[in-house]
Image (cartoon, rainbow, N blue to C red; front, side):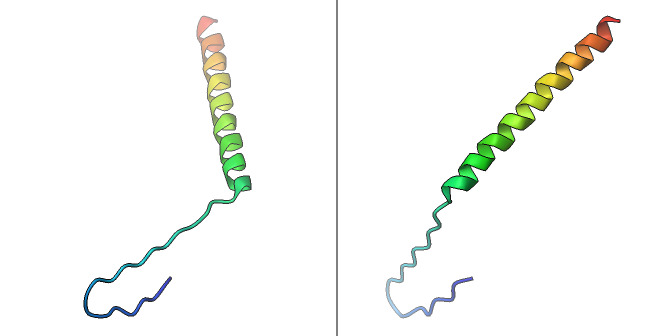
Length: 51
């Protein structure tokens, strides 16, 4: 948590964070996994409903 001492007048604080590339890759893999599980569940549900 950054602590900034303010002074009279105009104060500007810029805080940034660069997301690592591996985090973005893992996020896409996770989303893809959830989508695949959802599709699999729908197919299983349809298969059960046809019986």
